[in-house]
Length: 410
Image (tube, rainbow, N blue to C red; front, side, top):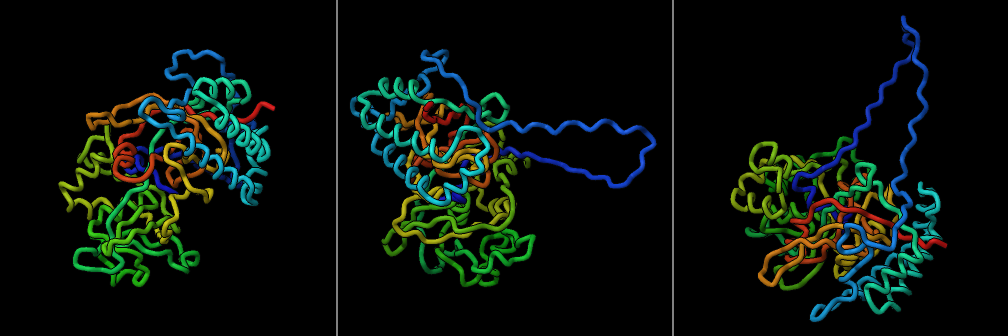
């Protein structure tokens, strides 16, 4: 699906950047004695084996207490969804791609065979367990917990959420549908760098079209520039066509520019406060002042290309479908793809009154996606699902928590 599926909350102004500066001096004589060379700095592994006790200290719910799995009176659980997500990961883990990735995985003891064996056993436990408590007890008894070191080396992980939107579009340009999304240029790999910017490719107002270097590659047309831009952020979408048909589009490639947070740009200019910034607030700002789109959208120079996926479901970076509330995106240069994980954080849920309230959850998930803004061991992007409610929830998701990977002890 993604940008792989791009992170929604980083469009709002939350970003982490790791900068490494390197200087080199060659054959320069020094009037003073050279300092002794320092030993190379040891790189901290992204995951650390931790001991998980049987009790729950200062945790509500307990770690591994996944109440959503079995549901409650009047609220069906999503056990089938979790089983489907597990099967998707098992399919990935049987590929040659997975074999190559795991050959060089940096954490000792985490191998492809162990990840796959762990998923098979966990699936059996999910099928056979009759309650949340029974599953939690079995997992604590049989599995080792590898905790992400987080963004501070102490396990603090920043959580955001993404979703798959549904938008109206047309296959042809009209006076109403005039903002295009583009197919991947077949010669993108031969483009000289730096690549053309967003401004070069679509113009200040998004209407360069006939004068764009991308002319002839238009995939779909939208009536609202913000809709088209949001799909660039999300990386995929379900589409309701003007002729009544439905289709879907997904990420096909992008130009070589880094992530730029439009939310942070708005805050920098004093248009919105950075504290408490959410996607709904940013969208509301642009709905009320649409002329500002021409000022702010070109600041994200990266340009995303799409392909039509038809009825194919939202798909993650390991090329399997992502499952609502059972799939996460992490930095795949650090975290084990397709593996079973456990997240502990606060997520928004709808109330009978139509509002959203936060609840602390411990949720079993599969690591099946990544994103251009998901960098480092302290970032998790949680897939919320498809449609408006998923978008509302994803737009206000943001907070700290912890992330664990579960592997069989033996």
